[in-house]
Image (cartoon, rainbow, N blue to C red):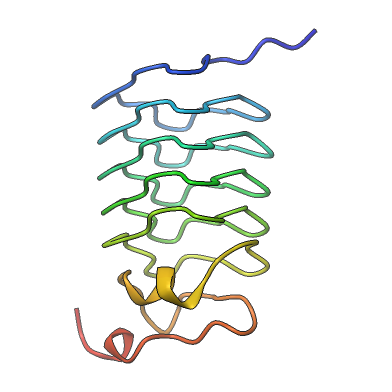
Length: 138
């Protein structure tokens, strides 16, 4: 039986977890506030209800990750690959999506995108439009 790297309710505030391989890990309700997850791999892992407020996920791979109801307030998702991730109910207020790949993301709404930073290089799923503010220089 596979045991997750981190269990439910784990607290990793301000931790540097650069380039971790968290494939299939269950980080449900984990507190990753200000965590450095640059280059981390979370392939099919679970972050349901996790807190990533101000976390750095630059260049991270979150392919098919479950981010349902995750708190990604002001998270740095610059160039993160979120292709196929579940963002249903995730809090993305102030998140940096500049250059991020959100193609085929499940559960992403226009309202979530409207509250983020992004640019013309940000890839959004069909039906979601880039806010006018994304055309302005940052």
